[in-house]
Image (cartoon, rainbow, N blue to C red; front, side, top):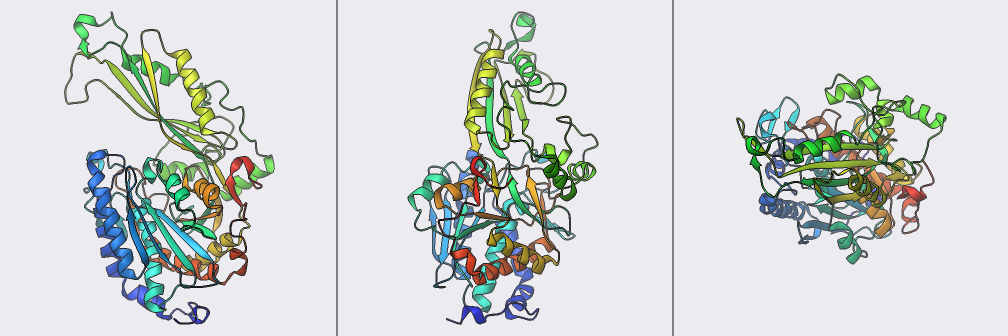
Length: 489
């Protein structure tokens, strides 16, 4: 095996870059094949497709030279893992990503079918192109380039690609707990976040927590004729709307008693720093293709989406949904509700507050049922960790620009999972753009982000491999924690 330290990557004509440039067309064809598989983890009818996608990814990892590749079944969707451990004395990097995708609905709003990926201009359109297949694949192609051009990696690597991230990773923690020794590493890296703007990379250092619930109201036993019973029975759809309408007050604050009791407050200096580094209200509205702001008074939109909690109604279902009308009073109505939580809010405590609030506000004509689907704690990452420095160097090499440090309004449960089970920090090194329309129709991935992302991943591995501080932190680092214990906020 060649001397890893001697396989330089600094020159533009280094073999590793000759390889990536000459294979861009093939990389794109492979990414298209990856995106074409409808690996929708939330929908039972796509369970076979999720399995097919896992097998495709595993076969690809074997082809590029990864070892110990396996597709591990779980009670729902499989986990794909692989390793390369031929760099003694070097750090171990855990590369995480998810190959499952969000449902494509509403299908009518897609310009082209969501699972028939197409390139228009410099963008690849398709469900999962940005979240997270394109970003995950940048790491895979970086591994391939190293193994082909240098016949070695500069670090030890273990890959963990799951098929349940979009449904809250219900089986990941138990899998990691059973296989703690196999996945022992010095640092984890994942790419499932976004730039501040085109040309401006960003390292995410804080994530909101998440709680996803489903509230169902039931009235009479079956749908009934609205002519025969209208005015005599309480309509579950109406009752649900009345409850949902009271979840916020007129100032945009969440109206659940006790909801704000444990929120950590930031100083004016910290808020000023957020204002100087984060996107403006105008930019956020532009990214959302919206005209009017809404929400909690006294905070910028960036603050509302990062340091303040949120309650969102993700969907309401009741009664007849087909064309034309149908004169019924529906028997039930359902709302899907999600919370984004901030330090020091605990998902389990917020869930109990919600349950108590609903119990107090459900009219006697209705029966309420609440189902929890996802719980994730907030997280804060120490930006002074040497692996974060490695990411800043990698971004400058890949994109020619220094990365900013940003908070994210989203939730990535695995960040806390890695800290609590493996005792390692996670570097959030994303390549998506704000207008990639993750979770929405016409999702895309900007192809220059893909190609430059590969270079960035190459440099990240190189920098981790040459920084002697990282391996010394194994199992002893406390810089990425559940925010209840975080040192830096």
